[in-house]
Amino acid sequence: MSDFNNIKITKKPNIYFEGKVFSYSLLFEDGSRKTLGVMQVGDYEFNTEEKEIIEITSGQLEILIANESEWKSIESGITFDVPANSSFKLKVAEVTSYCCSYIKE
Image (cartoon, rainbow, N blue to C red; front, top):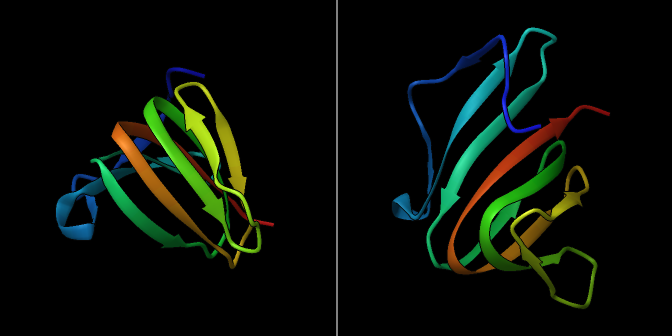
């Protein structure tokens, strides 16, 4: 889905890693939440509370999900899942945009 309808968007961004990663929260009528964001080139580590489904909308990176042994290359158009109560490391090779869906299980 490339467009979203009937949403609320937060004005204040979520800012991480001294502004190298930022996103805006999208709140849907059904109570679900997504974020749209941008990551600058760099290495990052994130922790999850809920399951996350992350779609890379532009750019390129590598990901290592907790308890996995191999880095995976991800580029524009690819989606990956991260389990709840987990973590993942990213090596962002070029400016990358993403859409993250939070899934309550």
